[in-house]
Image 1 (cartoon, rainbow over the protein chains, first blue to last red):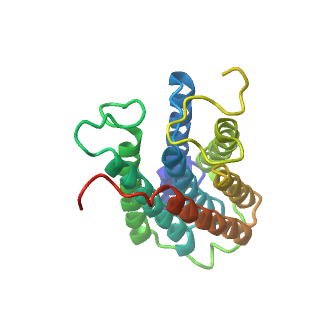
Image 2: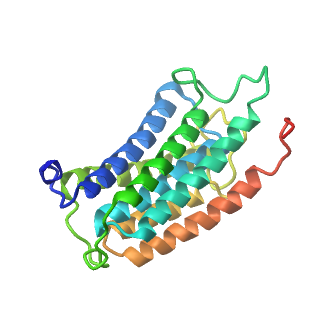
Image 3: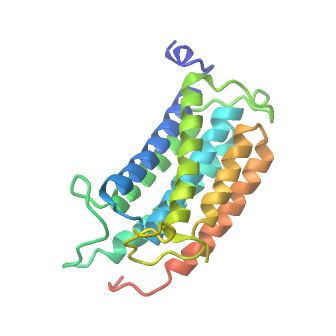
Length: 190
Length: 52
């Protein structure tokens, strides 16, 4: 079976690990875009990033401890929270003549992509929750082997979390970010 | 308002998940969610220039 190739016991474990890799990929992409194009995230953009990381925590719990309804609940609630902040930003810039915030990617701004991604994540997680035949006795509080795919998701997620924490600290310091940031607050000479 | 705070708490949550502390990780996720909601109120309560 294909999930055994990834070192995982069940195919739903495989889908959870893939989703964690996907969420990490989204965060890595946003960060690299920020660095390469000097396209600094606004406060609402940062809140959307936080929501992605919160979804990632739910998926990581599934990968590390086995599927549980509480883990799916965490991921789905986080996706809904992300939909709220991204929909708010879409509505902020929806009026005709508004150029939107930041550089568009493939014709859509990042907050619009975020709204689509959160919706798809909620749909994916809801479907997975329907199909996942969880064995509650299996998924105790003891950690288990996440397989190489799970480890890829976990380590890339942990590293991007650390990187984004440092990047946000450099951009905003220990206060609120300006609505339209142009430079890093804590990088002198920038 | 410290915008970096939820990044810090979610990092702690993920760290505890990685170290095998499930309940602690879920607790820190809940702290992050509370901060997220508070920050949403701070940033998302000005009137929109549209009619709904």
